Length: 154
Image 1 (cartoon, one colour):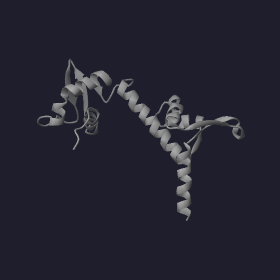
Image 2 (cartoon, helix red, strand yellow):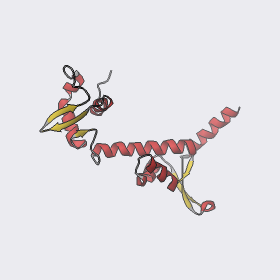
Image 3 (cartoon, one colour):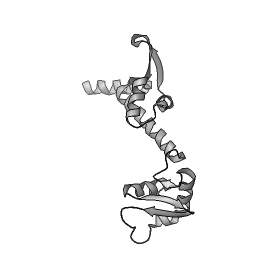
Image 4 (cartoon, helix red, strand yellow):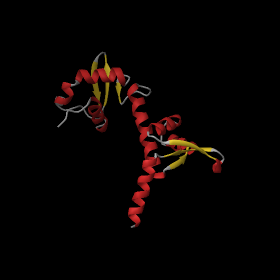
């Protein structure tokens, strides 16, 4: 079994309703109940790493402070997954609509296009839709969907 990463350990804190912070260089954990007994070995072994991670990437707290390096990275991952899932299902979508539904889901609309491009999507203006911009899933996604549909019809 592989050891847990610092982020995985801290996510486990969140699942239990606990928060963590660095106060005067010490790790402080708060939650619905006091932690019974000693901390698990995986946490003890990584205490300094957790303190460094929280201080350096998370604004000194877990869940990560808004605007911290880790929170921004997680948000970009969320946006990329969101765009991926929509284009996987729809194969194409009007860019402005993608931005609107991303905003409604809690994402940053301006990140939709960079996320789509990082996935290999293309953007085209369609004259039949008043030259509005549409985002198209990569060809292999679209072709894969056609092949699956043909298999299902057979």
